[in-house]
Image 1: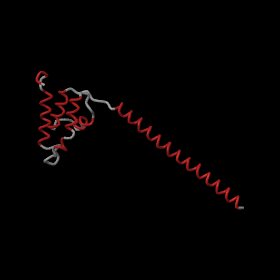
Image 2: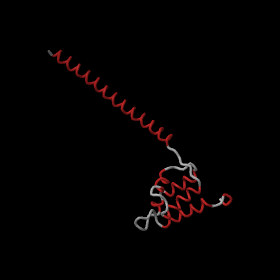
Image 3: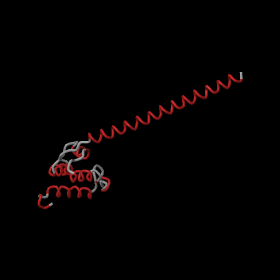
Image 4: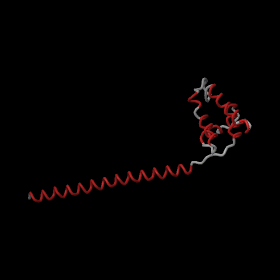
Length: 134
């Protein structure tokens, strides 16, 4: 009888160990799958991250229209949302997208304060300078 109890306990321990390992393997497989999916999505996202081709004049006009309230309802949002192929133009776009933090609006409903508006006007002047004066 004691031998049967010991065998029963041993079998229970072996089954417990097998189930524990099985559980650990399932957890390890889930972690590995998560890492693989994250890697694939990261790579896919980078390859799908398209840039927008905009000229200096198009960027200047977009900023100017925003300042004058003349742009379409989504023009500024689209300008802020998509990287521009030209690195300098994209630097300008990125800077414009944070001006509200650097120069908080003085009045409700404004995008940024007067300092931010001056930065944008400076970008417009820079973008419209003739090629020989840059």
